[in-house]
Image 1 (cartoon, helix red, strand yellow):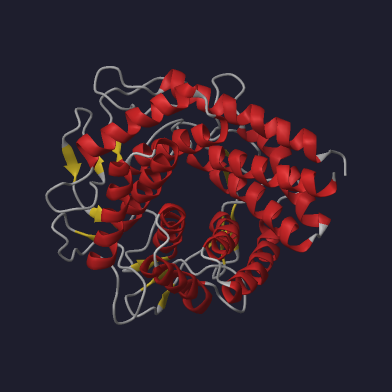
Image 2 (image 1 turned 120 degrees about the vertical axis):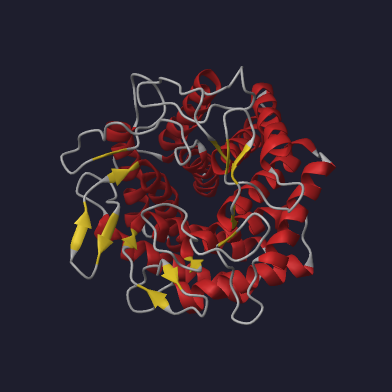
Length: 403
């Protein structure tokens, strides 16, 4: 190896500080409260941009988790700011759940109920409780869990329906974004409900929540992971019939470690064994999406044999963690090398040394993608800060194990 674990860990610690510094310096909305809805690639803010529930809950999670890691008092202040904005403007206190977006003044804008958005608020409230002990935050997380189970859980076929109207009535268009298929059940929503429920279990370890998590893991093992290709199927109808879609390398490697983490948190030995094997299988399948420079391509379309040759920021963050997790589980140094090479690629091509934070991505010629957000409805501090936090924790364990 051309690096050592201690160097890798120190570089991730420095990167975490720089990511958080960017969000502290560039995204606080002093006029409208909370955080700006959009900042462009050249750090130009759009003070009248809509504010997304996903962006705000990911900011809350990021600063809460970072405070739990370092106890830096400023991180707690930023977490409190995000928490109060979510409660005041984004939680729907009449019908339950959270709005998709509010306007720049904090008024409801898109009031549809995406379970994906609910999941991130639940995830963030759980983390905020861990750093503050604020019982109200814990109760908000539990309330969102109850809403998810009551309104979205499919009691006949299992799994969760993606989207509803504000009053939880059926809607025709369930898509998270324009690029998605209009599917009743999706991998992406199930992955982040799994992640959110796992974090809630850390502060509220009940039998009912454990049963929900076991069901989610089984959804992945039985329906979402293709047993022949070891890639994730992205879209389904409500009866778990598959719909066509691309292979998403970033989601494959993200699911690899999140599934194993969920099984370990609930201490289900049978599922721990299954998900460890699954994590390795998913990681191996993802390797074909790794370019020679260490970057991970975005998507592959099997039906046309077409690789979408862009390297977005978030799959790189997930590859860093997912390959590191595979190394921890297997001891095979090829995964440690892949994780490190991903980090080298991030430093070379994704990190913005002029304005801070990470670019959205690069194209096939390794040129920075233009006119993309630095902060926005989808561009958040969550994937890259989480990769740093996970990487630091995992590398610490590895360093101690060889000491």
